[in-house]
Every structure is written in structure tokens, then in C-alpha cells.
Length: 594
Image (cartoon, rainbow, N blue to C red):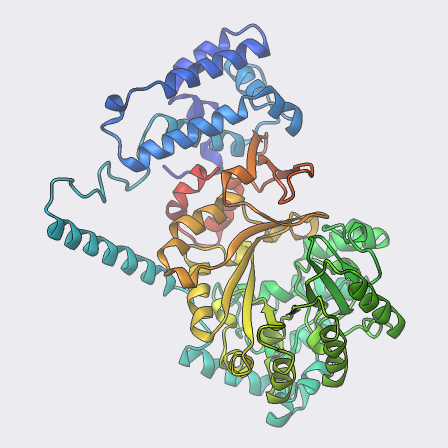
């Protein structure tokens, strides 16, 4: 029953439960309406198992989830927390009151909610599909189940095959040609290409340079020019530019979206350029920095930032507020600041692990890195050093044998470990060069972990599953999948939380356990990574007029206040998918992840 914006209104919402809206219309006050709604829920929950016998297990579970969600929305305390009363909205509608603040997204949410409560199947869903009769002999039941699992995997594999990866022979060949074109424009040789310092000297930042090697439309070129004007960070390494196809397509959209800022992003960044340091500090790092270049949000780990820039800038970078250009001249920490930060770590005996990030610390030369790691290795209570770097994806030639040996030399099994955490966003970024770089690190005994930011551009069915499959194949362990931060300037990148829950349950769950080791988290201001998979970690408070779900997210440290989180409306997200050519029927269950 998947529909889009122009198909949802009061009539589509109320047709499944007319008796409820008749009762609500008779309520004289909001509190009476609230009690009416809760009494109706009581009646629904009292339904006997016998009367549900015609429903499939899926429909029964979905019905229970919808009842639980609606009950959560009826609480008076939820109204106060969210600043929006879902109950009042339904009561007003039942009485025929005008509510111009309620849009198609609101009606879409409740249409699907009542559809689920009434036990109706989704498109293509058969009541008893997938069930194995209980009276089958064990061997016959086992064979039937095995055939079902074969079918599940075949469908998953077919879905994953939609997504190209950078190890495919045809892709490698295309990129070899791209490399030649870029070298001819930049006046370089094959030897230059494999020199990371040459790559760093030729990072593309201006609209003219970017357009000389990447086909971009005029509006994109104007956005980059405006970004340059207001010192909004834009940068693409020649190597990463070679991963972008000659003509834009869904195949390389993820790669383009990483580095080519949309006009809306640039406009918002430019509008608040004078307040940038605080306005765009989504994580409120100013409040978690006990000393310059240190961030601390957890008991036994801190972040050390020796270099506050990168050779290439991700559009949705968490620290866009403190980066003005790639490889910025002032990005290197002053010697006195670094010394003070290291002394703070030495004095802070609770710290057991240091994450060296920034910016990208692997931009530092080997001698600087060695001195930094030697200083950390001399601190007795540090038993893990983590390096956060996107260099394997953007500048893999930097990870040569010398650097790998240097990093590996600081491992002291049983005493201290060193690992690399990187950010591969898409299977299209998994290239022979990345594979070689990771192999050099692994041969030194170093573990490599991945953090993926779950943006719109990587959220198609089975796209993230395909990435996890590729990562394990090349020796990278999935570590975290991040809910994209709800930053105003990166609205184009956001995905509803239910899509991540759906992906975890219906897509990544089909992979072997070693390929789905990542946890789904959201980064909350000041508090850091907060898990979201369990319902104990969030409470649904409201569905507002735009159709956005409003949650209270419960921080990892329970004595802290909850965080009010307004999600992306599901209907808006599905509309974007449809505009991008996706069959939104494939996403029909998204409405039922609360």
C-alpha cells in the first residue's frame, strides 16, 4: 500500500478505524480524548489470541508494535516533552477542526499505524508465507528450512549485486583511464601519482580545477566558488577524483556526495560564517575540551588532535566549524599546545586509550608521528592507541611499507595495542590501492576498523550490507554505523532512524555474524556515541505536523538528561528515494520500526 505525498489525508488515515474517530469526536476535552484513545488501545490489546489466528506472525508482531507506539504517543508527559500533542491533533481532526499545520507526512504516519493495528498485510505479504508446519518430520522440516534460507540469500545477493565495487575489472579499467586524464591535466607522471606528497600538493579546491577533471553541472561549480569565497572547506585529492565517473550516475553518487557540497549546504555555512565556531559545533566540543587539542566524553578514553585538517574534506564533516581548507597552513598543533596536551594525558590516570584524530593525523610526516607515538608509549597507563584516518580511502599511497612498519613497531602484545579506524563509505571506494594499503597494515599485526556514516546516498536496500561484505573481504572490521548528525547544513544527507533499524533487521541480519559486527549509534552533543537499536535506548514522544517522529534518546550515562531528537519525516525520505529511481514498495516495512 505504499503511496506518496499526494495520497495521504484525513480520509486515508481514518478509514481503517472509523469507530475510534467517532469516539474521539464525542470527547469534550483533551483529557477525555486522551482517555478515549487509551481505552480504545486497551480494547485492542485485550484481543484474544484466537481472533488473531488468521494473521501471520509478522502481522501479529507489527500490530503489537503499532499499539505500543500509539500508546507512547498518548501520554501527557510526552506532549510536554515534545512540545506537540499528537493526541490533540487526532482529537481536532475527529471534530472537523482545521489543522493547517498537519501535512501529508503526518497523515502517512497514522495511515500506516492504523493499517498495522488492524492487521492488514503489506503489499506482497501472504498471511502464512515462510511458516513451517509443526507436524513435519525433523528431516523434512530441515530441508524445507534450508531451501527457504537459500531463497533468502539469493534475494539478498541479487540486491547486493546492484552496487558496483572498486575491485570490479571494468571499474578498475575505467579508473585507469580517469587517472591518465587527471595526470594530463595536472602535468604529472605515473611516478607522481604514487607519491602521496605530490597528491597532497595537487589537492583540487577551486571550481576551475575541480571542473577540469570532474564533469560537474554549472550550479555545482557556482556552489564551490561560493564555498571558496567564504572559506568553507572543499577539497578532492587527484586519487579520489579518479574514483568519480566521467558522467554522474547513481553508481558514483556516493563518491560525489562525499566531497562536492550542495548549494544548500554552502548557503547555510555562508549565512552563519561569523558564528561558525559555535553555530556548527554540533557535538559541542567546546564543552568537552579540558585543554586545547583534547576532547573527552567517556571515562577511559580521550581524543588528541595534533592536526586539524585533512587532504580531503567530507561535506558532512563533524568538525567543519574548525576547518577552512584542506591541509590548512595553521592546522598543525603548536609544540607548546601538544606538550601541554600530552602532559594532561600523563596526569589523567583514568585514561587508558587515546584516539589520535583531527583532521587526519596521517598527514603528519613519519618523524613527527614517531615522536608523538613514542611520547604516548612512555605513559604507563595508556594501553591502546587508536588512529582515526580516512587516508586509506582518499590517499592510500601514503600507507607505504615504511609507515606500516612504523605504526606496527608501537604494538607491544600484552602491554599496548595500536589500531587504525577508517571511514569507507561505499563499496565503490574499495579499490586495489585501498586493499594494498590495508594489507600492509595487517601484515604488521594492526587491526583496521570501519565507521560508516549512514547518509541518504548509501541508504538503498542492501547497499550497506554490500559494503560490510566487501570490508571483511579486504581485512577491515565493521565497527560503527552512525546516524548522520542532524546538522542544519547537511539536511540533504539525513536518513530517518527507522531506515537504520530496518537495514539492521532485514538486510545486515542476513550476513554472517563476523560481517555485521558494527553497532548503530547516534552522536549526541557533549555525550558522544549513544546506541539506538534497543527500544530501551529511546522513547517515541510525538509525530509532529510535518510527519517527523520526535524521540527522547537516552544517553549511555543514565544520570544525564535525555536528548530531544526530531527525525527526518519518513514520507519525505521515500519521496527522495522514488525521485532517485528506487521502488519504494521495497521499503514498505520502514513505517513499523519505532
